[in-house]
Length: 190
Image (tube, rainbow, N blue to C red; front, side, top):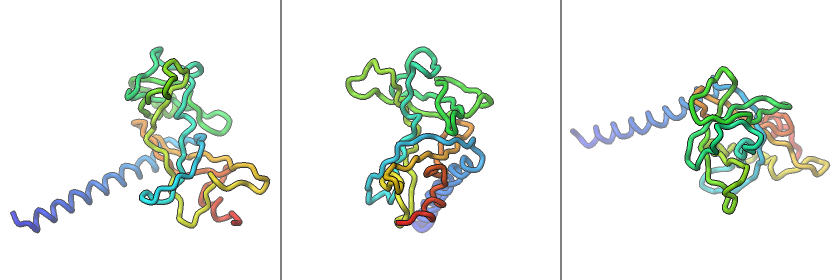
């Protein structure tokens, strides 16, 4: 085989992998269940990743004393599914399952249990990783996690996410005081 053929095949395989990742995310954004989740946004600086707002989901920390779960607290590294229900305009965790779930009962988000914080081995809090925590913003865009309203209060920030049938979570947008990010950014008066 010629070197140019091997090089071309390698480039094609890489391009197909990239296209596959984009298509996979787009399918979730188009067909996944839409949920609005509380976040505690922060603005880290990372020159290599671009400009983004870190948006840890409110459902990443669950009080297992108030949320139904399988009895045994999931151990670190175990995959779990979290059933969400809408409560007061946003979705909250109401049940945790470690096995197959019935999507007809509502959206189930897939997560991986994380180790408890140091020194909190008997903590009632379960830490979960949903593999989403960033919302990218334009270089010239406003950052609602550091800006404040005219009266000095912080903006209320929520993530609009889509949940696929397999439980994968993809962030679609941010709501800043109930307004989509692009609209909020266009209206700001900095």
